[in-house]
Structures are given as C-alpha cells and as structure tokens.
Image (cartoon, rainbow, N blue to C red; front, side, top):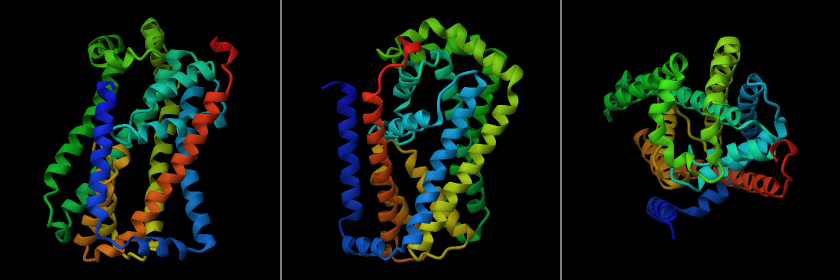
Length: 333
C-alpha cells in the first residue's frame, strides 16, 4: 500500500469513527420516517434544485472552455464533472481531488488541448473557491454583528476568511501581470501533482498555457464576469436548497439562524475528511443545538443531505463507467 493510499484509508476510518460517535445515540428510525413523510412534489422540487446546481456549475466550466476556443459538449462535461466529484468525495477533503482525472478526460476523451483543459478547470475552481470564501465571509460578518450569536468567537473566523478571500484575487492578478514569473515559482509546489503519469506532458505545454491565459484576459474578460455571475447564482441555489431542506425537516429559523447552519456546514466541508463524513453531522448537531432545538430535530436534515450525497455518488459512478467505456477521441490520439 502506498503512503497516499494509507493516508486516505486512515482518514476514511477517522471519518467513519467520527460519524459513528456523533450518531450512535440518535434514533435512526426517525430519520427514515422523516424521509417517508415527504410528498412527491417536495421530492421533485428538491431534485430540481440539485440538478440546477450541477447544471450551473457545468455551464460555467463550459463557458470558460468556449472562451478558450475549445469545444466540449455540455453532456460530456457534465459526465466529467460528476465523475470528478465522485473521486473528490472519496479523497481527503470533499472540495478537491478529482481534478487530475478531469483534465485527463478532457484531454484524452474530448481532444481538448492540454493547456486549455488545465486553464479552464483552474479558472473554474478559482471562481468557485473565491465566491465560496466571499459568501462565507459575508455570513461570518453577519454572525459577528448579531448579539444572539455571541456564544462563539467569530472574529478569528472572519479574519481567516478575509485573508483567504484577499489572497485568491491577489494571486490571480499577479498571474495576469507576470504569468511566467508566478508559474515558475509555483512549479516546486505542484511538481508532485504534475508528475501524475497521465499529466506528465503538461510540462511541455506551459508556454501555451500562459499564452492562452493572456489571450483570455485581453479579449474575453466578459466571459470571466459571466462565469462569476454564474458562480454567485449557483450559490443562491445552494442556499435555497438548504432552506428547502430546513422546511422539510420542520426547522424554522430566522436569517441569523439560517446563516449559522449554512456557515457551519460549509466550514465543516473544508476539513480534510472524505465527504465531510462526521464533520458535517457534528456541525449540524452543534448549530441546531445552539439555536435551541433538540438534537433529534436535525435527524431529517442529516438524512436528506446524506441521501443527496448518495444520489450524486451514484450518478458519478455511472459517469465514471461511461467515461471508461467511451473510446478515445481521434483528436487526442
């Protein structure tokens, strides 16, 4: 067993142990009953919002690829995104992990030039990450200014999020001004990632990647603004889905309470455990208790969120199977 596999296995065991400890005293039958009480219209609305989240994420990536003069169908890109999310879910941290394979599929399966594949995914993840930090910062500031939320010290959270929020655009604009200078100094940090056997050819395409980046900034800045707008809209749908789940679970909260739950979940997802298993459950139980609800009130919410994760994993597994059986694109051979 390699060191990376051993670490992943250890993290999985830790996540399962944490989830078991968090849920061991909770009535799991109540979770099942809560799911069975949902009507067909409620299931349909919930499914629609989740499909919309995936569609908006894929549309942002599709727009970036088109701006780089690449051509990948929306359906193929959806399969690649779902498959990549599945890989990310089972690796440390549910936010990242599947990117090397997504680049590989774009390059080998769709015939997209390797620099364009790397740049499009990098910009896609940049926008997603930056908006993520921005929303978290706004939420943390709201909690900091709320007297009701004084039970926790939000100053440190605000400071960390503000530093992260500022660091991302600073790096982006530095790359825009001096892309070659930045990429050369980042090279030692990404050497291990670039040594991935399926991405080893990336080294020979570095100049093309820098040129594509400059071209995008010179002539297609509007696409970046549109992609940013899609990211913000996507976050609005994500928050709407959480609000809907709270209604399903019969948890009535005001704006501050909703913000506390949303921030707790998203911060838990940033922790390096596969799928946020255990950490999300702990964050939900903590935030629900802080709002004055019984722990049992969070059962239906936890069940719905994990059911959603299972459905996404199944869709991702089907996408992985489709990508493995699909023949290599002629342009990539």
